[in-house]
Length: 248
Image 1 (cartoon, rainbow, N blue to C red):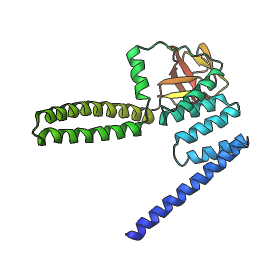
Image 2 (image 1 turned 30 degrees about the vertical axis):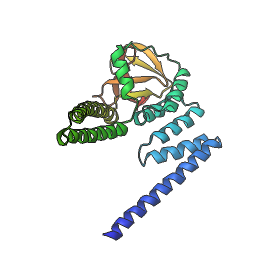
Image 3 (image 1 turned 90 degrees about the vertical axis):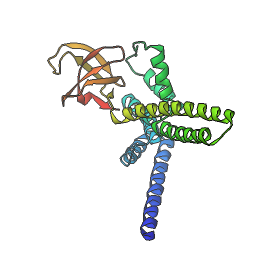
Image 4 (image 1 turned 180 degrees about the vertical axis):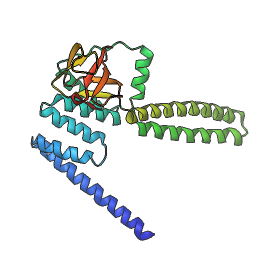
């Protein structure tokens, strides 16, 4: 049994070391302005598993190559894993500013916008850890309530228990919301230089408007293989070929 455990740790160490060395090669290629090589290595690393840091670096490499669509795509993927990352948000804003389409989203209710910003402050794992920590805090405070005799201590224990449980529920709800975003990805980025949005899922459908590379869309109808019905931030709806977009 001990030999198996040792073997597992050895394999994990070798894999981690290999990943770190490969990432260092990609970073070196990026520093030396060999962006094509950096992109190739970062893409290979992502095949081993998702990483917000690698998505961010890949987005930077694509941005240097003037591939705005893929830069924005990878910045958005980085944000799914690291929603509170200021560097990713800043670079995403810079990339969006260079796109043809200027986004004018429909205004949100203040409370909805505020809640969304609060949820996006931390990634799913961090919210989950906060949920566990607050639950343990509630148990400890509840122990104080039950096993102490002083009125002051019992009141303190009761209120801390109540507050900890409320915050625990909120943290878990936020974690659930973040997990839902990761598991059900309904947003996509336009990668074609331009694409005509049509009234029906057909090239013969009426042309409604044109969107360009880097535009973010939400998939409304995912039932067809070759076409997707999409909605834009400003409420416009239409159909585009699936070949023009890639899911975040």
